[in-house]
Length: 348
Image 1 (cartoon, rainbow, N blue to C red):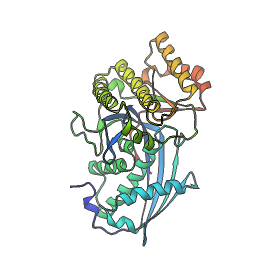
Image 2 (image 1 turned 180 degrees about the vertical axis):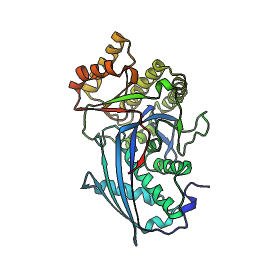
Image 3 (image 1 turned 45 degrees about the vertical axis):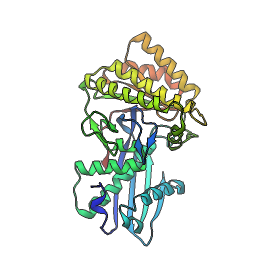
Image 4 (image 1 turned 90 degrees about the vertical axis):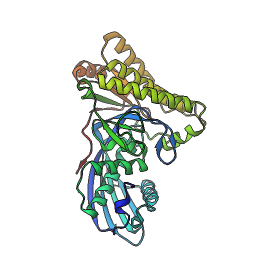
């Protein structure tokens, strides 16, 4: 049975809700799709705490589907069009969505479209609002099925968004792990030593990136190294699972950095190649490697599809590492967002 089957014959009503959903940072990257929003390889991420999107949605009965969206108080017709197209894609399963008018007010705590996964937090926040609305029609309470359904609906909107529906660490994509699925994400437990990782986000550039993640995924379809990348990602996924389970911070960090560099290598060698990293991104990487060689402290970097670095390290070393970040790396940045492993979405 489809996760949307219980709602297909219901009737719409007026309803308002608000959800705050976090971004996530992928430790093993998802880059490339098969079918409709199905990942070409499993991925694993850490849900953040301070980087989040807050979205309020007013659903009203209407003669036709319409969407108004306001980002930080400003009307955004382009984003409204994306949400409308997403809802239209669900009409086959939930026909009465065509009789809704939506007004969406949303805001982020971090720059949009700069590779800090604003689509993950934004679309998961909206999917949680939509799931809340669907459950209000049946009187179902929130529970495991609620979040599984929200993760499924998030994936259909933006693949990595499905991982933001859960706190802590999350996997997505079929693997050897129990209950893993291509259709929704599942929570993943890690060793206590790695359960409270810090993430200092170096905002190298707050300018919206020139090539969207959706376009980047599409370019993997004709990529000469695509199959090799998918095999690498599957191997790295299994190694990362082992590292996080055993508390091996060095293995975790080595895979973390290799996955980030592999992701950007795919961009630079893709059809219509492009580069999202910036000179200060590279300078920061070099300084982090030097710091680690000199001190032996477990400071590692990763980055998603953008120029901005996530610096990952255990909480126990935060004093010395934050001193280094503040004194040496901050001149390379526009700002630094101090973040950490988060507990997941909340209703606001």
